[in-house]
Length: 124
Image 1 (cartoon, rainbow, N blue to C red):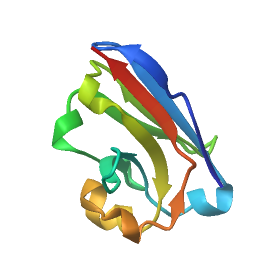
Image 2: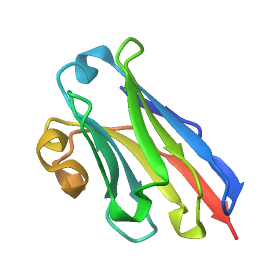
Image 3: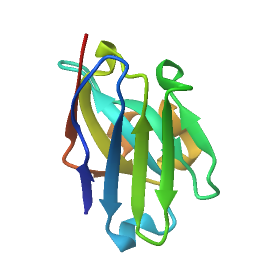
Image 4: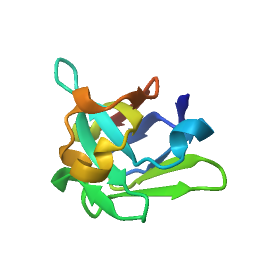
């Protein structure tokens, strides 16, 4: 239903782009986002995008990451630049109406749809 691609390994200061293709029945009429999970921790919101294109970002990624979507392709993207070792995590694509209301403050337990995750590793 949600499938991420684009993770990998990069050196500090480098860039990576993540993509997520979403099943049509999920994509329509909902908000989308990216979460990440550090070992032993809950998933946390990184960036979200609403139906009208409004975006929210975690403070730790503002100015470095950019979320976008392509409605014709039912696709969600995350462009990550100036990556830091502390960005190393498993990144997940997410879809749920609750993201429209709370953005990156959405608790992961409230999100219904998830991708399988893609690992991003940033070396110093």
